[in-house]
Image (cartoon, rainbow, N blue to C red):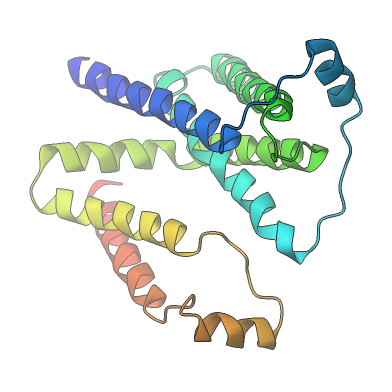
Length: 219
């Protein structure tokens, strides 16, 4: 019980810090512009869906990725100890409501911080990210908990577990801002700019091997 409390408290600290990071990152460069609340509310009620070009694709995908860790960590706190399906569904619904409410509130206050763009596209992306984070926890949350416990215990298992988490984290950061190539010319340009790294498969292989070792031993 004590270990579970220690685990939950660490995840809670991470969630609070990450929420502040989302708020800060969504409002930079923090150039506040005073407008009336009524005007902001009227403008927000007419928020539009924008046709995104290739240049905006990376930002849209980044908005999806931004909210995945939020609902994943919230699920780790409020769903990890639940056993009944009804409680899991109830807590999952509350988590989604909280995440979408945060996204909507941030989008609203972005009107006070130009040149931030307010659109339905952002809300859709952030909702998708919230759902993905929750689904990932429901699908792989127990494995994540075991990986974390292996790291805390130390030894060979900690090294294997750390390799899995490191590999996944490395791939996540390396592909940022997720502006995937859609033509050979894009691929050629990205390669010349050093954005394509040919050792990605090595990282994947090491992570997969480590995960398989842990699964054979503990699952």
